[in-house]
Length: 194
Image 1 (cartoon, rainbow, N blue to C red):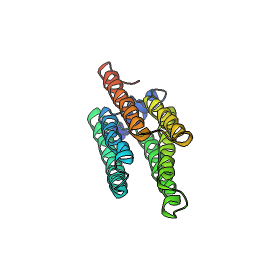
Image 2: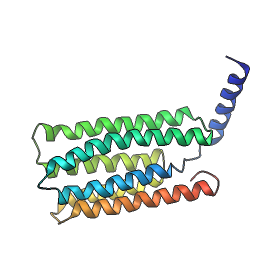
Image 3: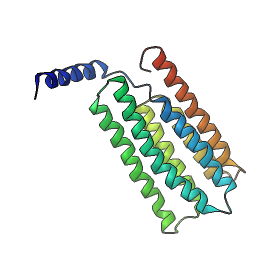
Image 4: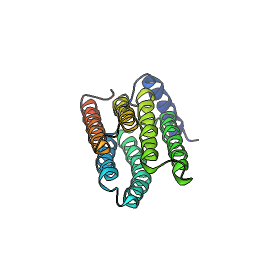
């Protein structure tokens, strides 16, 4: 290891230790990306009932594509800011990687045709709400509110047969994520972390 590499590694260690208690504000572009994905995808459940393959295909592409794009946006943001916090990156990767596994497990009852599609869709909302709420507790505080809104929408979907519940839930969650994106942008403009 060269002297410069050692110095960089030492400085990364010191910076990470100094930021250990700070909570990242988040990457605004990722919040806006998922606000848009959800604003389009949730209403597809209400309005695409006659074409269930559309919302299934949409979420397959948007889920994996949005995840990959989120990873790229996060990496780009880290490079631009000059912050190399590998431990935090591993936490993000582990959290959302386990989330991907949870989505596959949530899909299992649908694939085995053990639950009707509407109930199976609600299961995805529960999984997503839990992932976002826990990310809000452990990673970025602003995700907590979006997660709690998703869990409340899940409760409404499960308890009542309201019309356009998915559309209303999608709009509310998209607004919460856009708000989180604006809050992250404001926190960054003020010098850093939320």
